Image (tube, rainbow, N blue to C red; front, side, top):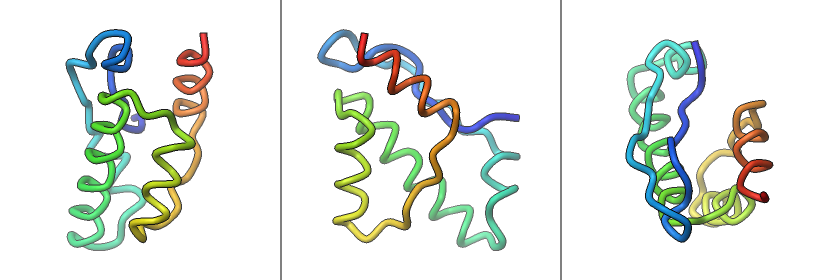
Length: 86
C-alpha cells in the first residue's frame, strides 16, 4: 500500500508519463465516497502540477490559496522533493 506519485522527471527536465493512484491508501484516509472523490481530484491535480514542473512548496501554496485542505507530508513526497533538488 502506498500513496500516489508521479513517475518521471518534471516536464522542464522530461515528462512524467504515469500518475499512479493507490485506491486502498486513499480509501484508508477517507470516510465517505465524497471524501474519496475529493481526495482523488486533489491528488490528480497535485501530481499534474508536478508534471508541469512545479515543486512541492509551490504546489502547497497554490493548494492553500485554492482552499484545499493541507496535505499530509509523506516520506514518499519528501524523497521526491529531495530527488528533484539534485
